[in-house]
Image 1 (tube, rainbow, N blue to C red):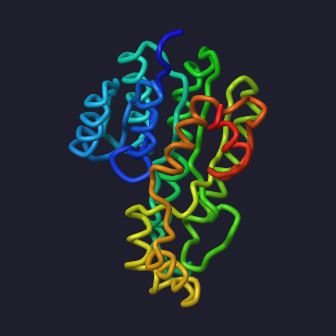
Image 2 (cartoon, rainbow, N blue to C red):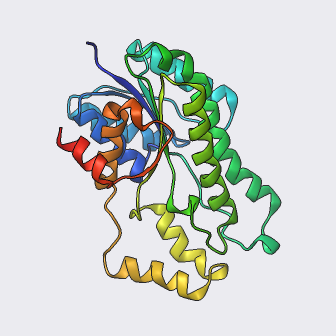
Length: 256
């Protein structure tokens, strides 16, 4: 069987970069997407240095033409498409509903929900033809836990969970999964620490500061490894679920 081909959005840094590198180590060809061409090129160089294969397409996948070109780039480069990992997301606006900017609120949902929708829609014809097509959507505990100041982010991740559940109903041969990656040491966490005190409840904001100071944030490589394995191995019977990166079922899959 030829090399599996997988798309990763938000692949220029943090969790997305870690996922892409893990996929390459596992033998997949990876198509990288983010808005920064230079940062993507550096990730591609890392993959090629380890003997892997990578393609890249820079751009905002919340724009239909970019999503379509991303799918086309992956298929042209590697002859097939087996999975997409919708990881690109933003936290802003960190603001209470009464004080939030409607344009920023709408932009959050455009990137966090419409982007995965567009990529998935464009990918489906190819995923249906794959031996086992998979859509892995990176969600958050915020999808099921309300936090003051996070109205856009919480709403977008809850919507992403339901989008995935509906996708599983509509596409019974494509495995669709949302994954909670845990509290990861990324730029989003740094942004939260820098700005969260303006909108979050003080005790909640303090917990995030304390987690960072105590060194409790996950290195991206840990959930990145799990997400890469899910894109390659998650069984069809899991389709439609919202699962944590360290769920015992995922840990068992990693040991196979």
